[in-house]
Length: 135
Ligand SMILES: [Zn+2]
Ligand SMILES: [Zn+2]
Ligand SMILES: [Zn+2]
Image (cartoon, rainbow, N blue to C red; front, side):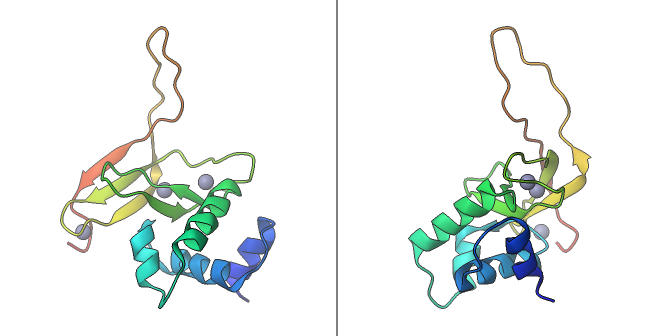
């Protein structure tokens, strides 16, 4: 019935009211959310609680960082069966220059690149920028 509760259960996270509410914000949003986006949805939300909640969500494979080239750290819901062991999201993120929103481009993958000699590659981020479909 409640998708947020199901997701917490599935990722073995305790069902606290704050977690449920933060997760519901992600489920409602069709885009990546910054900390201030989430804070704005609450009457009162302790920053430490928010920080810890996002961290545990990321660790357990519920959300991932949506790197968009802006100075804001944003997170988006994972869709690819990510787990505590591994994040499988390698899709691009689209940053709208007009409204500042960031979207997951689930169908566009970051290209495989070969690191130059002596360099070790961690994660590749593909950032797209332009105008979103509502601007
Ligand atoms: Zn993920
Ligand atoms: Zn836009
Ligand atoms: Zn994403």
